[in-house]
Length: 124
Image 1: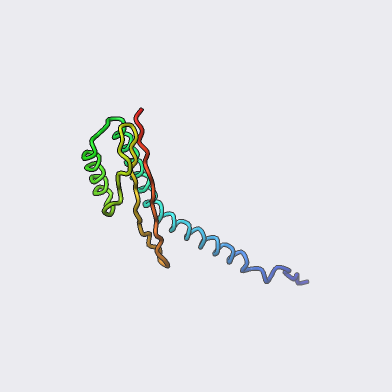
Image 2: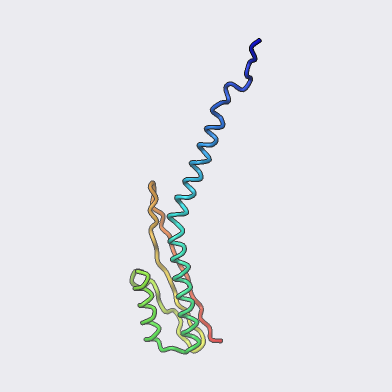
């Protein structure tokens, strides 16, 4: 006697599910590979700007010295002109603004990664 397989038509269902899962995983990995370097660079720039603001407020640096340090950071990270600006300069309060864009190129589209940050340096 022949047995009838009641799931004969479902043979491809697991394959399609596996294929979709793999496509989603590949897209997620590709996106992470594209975005993570830009994010890591942003975090490093913000750390350096915070450090500059805190040092400037604590050591009471001159405005010219702060602008030279801001320019060296701008050149170090290849940022556009006027992306790092001195907002407030005081004896114990320092504010430095960071604003720039980076383009992340995906195959289908390009994403504009915007960074807007204000570092508040305060003397201890």
